[in-house]
Image: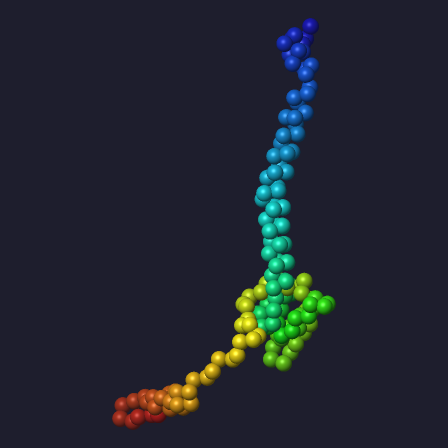
Length: 141
């Protein structure tokens, strides 16, 4: 006989082999979940939160690389009006935002006051007082 009796007896109980064969697949799924699926779900949740919190005055970047400042937020149709240059406004879908770069100031805050007139007039006068000497002659800038 070519097969030994000890080897032939071990082939009879196939119940434990199925669990051992399934174990690597389960292990691979667990690794994929923690390395790929879970972080992606976290990113999607953060992105959805960011889209919900966009407000007027925020500096944004679109998916196409378009950068601008939000001038109007419309909750009805999920569009934003974005000023990309002085006087140039475009409408953009809220879902096409890639990133909010800087939060704008709240709309209800009053604008900051300028420095007093005396300080404004003193600064240019001080800048004009600088002089450069070149040998015997003095050149005013």
